[in-house]
Image (cartoon, rainbow, N blue to C red; front, side, top):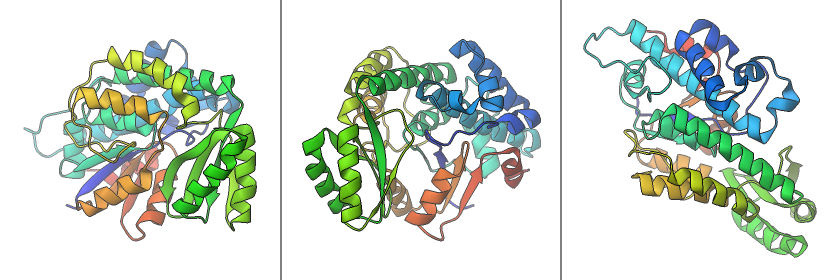
Length: 335
């Protein structure tokens, strides 16, 4: 079997109806949505399945919705593997959403994944799937994270802009020049030629002109605020308090941290790096390149949408990637 890494979707991949077909064919996935409703205290399942879109796009709703949908897909895959597994003494993953499902992953992949990673919000899903944190604790963290980021966004008019066609050195220079209008910095190094900037509204507007003057293309993003920038410091401070009261364990599968491309090793580093993630750029391209350099031969994207699949094709064209975002995608792992 190829050496496989699992990738988990981040914020912005939401769509009305996500997870509905998965829950219809998997009792494990359906149980995840029911448990999530109890944890968050509102009908998250209906928001995922039926919308409305404007509600699902809110940062405080979007984050727990994407996390829950991704976990539901993960649990559906694990449950599907257990049902068809031909090895009776293979340990089964827990039947409810509180377990990591790692043993189920060993069955449907034919081997334990060599690593996991998640884009921003997806890092929490990866830590859950790797057995570092329970579903309930991770969902409570994600819910609080979304609330804190929403509040920080409302405090200062801000936003994000994707720069296409420019190099990292050019983006750094643009940020230095645009900073005369306000706080701005690189927020996501997604793939070659695609870097996201994050900052105050006036600085973003200045950056758009500078990007175009440098021969690039600027695409303003429809987000609540300046994620992964210094403007998220109040959110990071608030999240730190909750992280300190959350139980973590060392991951059973290596998980790459967004902030430094290192593997999460222990609860102390997990807490620190998750807090730092809110104010630091996401090093996604470098994370994928590290996994490739260490021998990963195949990627599986789990979660709504195909964002990570698209980025991977730009980072490493020709490397196999399987997208599992729907019930149809589950069929690729039928046993």
